[in-house]
Image (spheres, helix red, strand yellow):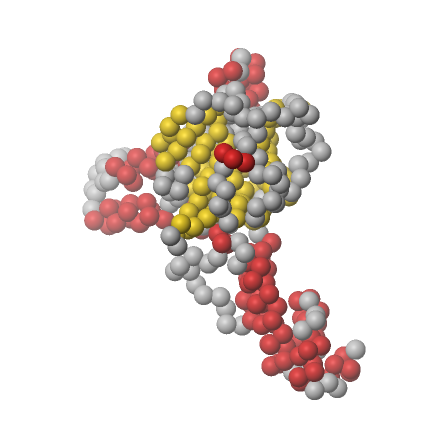
Length: 338
């Protein structure tokens, strides 16, 4: 095979190599074939990969980020990593929202830090001097920290008619201290007058409430499932503090959204419970795309927690089936201040 490729003219070699995948092309490159021809083939693979990435608007490189490498092979490697990545968490959030692996995100409370940062210079401990450098440092940390409502989209989504199923496991020493600091949901992407807009529907596994966040920042909230901390007795509360919660979000091909959860403690899982389905007419009809998302409100977090993505696809796992007799969501909505 190597001798055959070496005997080909550069233009013919380019055509032949254009049918190779990245692994095979790498083998051909190792055999020291025509560098210009191989570079052109890497460029073709890069362009195809970037076209796939461009279908994910929220994965596009943000303004101000370093440009892609000039070397087509190296640029392709970066794009492939992005395509395979399930989540993308900004590095500047690492102190409070940290991605420890592709499927695990750890969150830390920001209560003390937010007070000192937002409140400005203050005295504490044995060092009472507060100078300009301290003020500048606080401002810099405030700008780099995650916002009050920090959303992390997942690379699980699609367009109208595509189903989405995502499952996560929430673990903490005190789930009651997590409360609504973590929300599982879906983002609807659209545009109005040339401006990108995001409409979000999300669910708190702990309190059972469902939230809507409109593009202008306004919000609504309704009770989808009972609040675990409010409904738990003494024994249940103890297991809740030391256990974990699995939460699922399912969006059908017709556009309805369902949220479910189940508790787990001592290696045992409780039965699944689902809220009613939010009907399609309740959701944006002009959205161009939709993506599953994780929303964090670290200022509401009282103890550290870990969110593990346990399922992602178009169908729910067999262990978390929808109710055999589904019902439409029916609850009283109220205003919510994000």
